[in-house]
Amino acid sequence: MRILSIDYGQKRTGVAVTDPLQLIANGLTTVATKDLEAFVLDYVRREQVERIIVGQPRQMNGEDSDNMRRITPFVNRLRKLLPDIPVEYYDERFTSILAHRVMLESGIGRKARQDKALVDEISATIILQGWMESQNAHL
Image 1 (cartoon, helix red, strand yellow):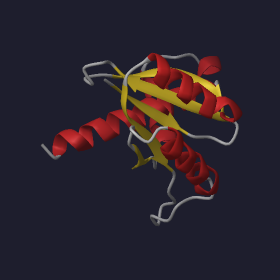
Image 2 (cartoon, helix red, strand yellow; image 1 turned 90 degrees about the horizontal axis):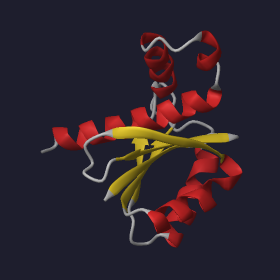
Image 3 (cartoon, one colour; image 1 turned 90 degrees about the vertical axis):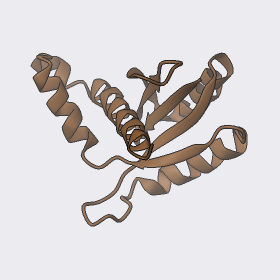
């Protein structure tokens, strides 16, 4: 079963997913946030998803950022619509910075680095990878 990761944005949302063995996190796509709920529901109908991880934006002092007022209702709806799939938060501080660094280090050109959709997808992948590493640290 796969694990799905969401980097929720006001306009666009990055989505990443593991392989069925949950070994590798891969960017899946970027979705218009207004279409996100329908996208997730359709995806879990087509693929076996064990868990959904949603990036939790926090400020440097650890408090939730302003975007949480949009994320919380979305997560609550997902939990009602998909009661058999756990939905949990994962601290997403620094993921956008890391996404830009990954893009620089991988040699992606300047024009591609300005593609906010690509940044969102990479950020979702970093959130998922971080969550996976935190689970392995507890084993």
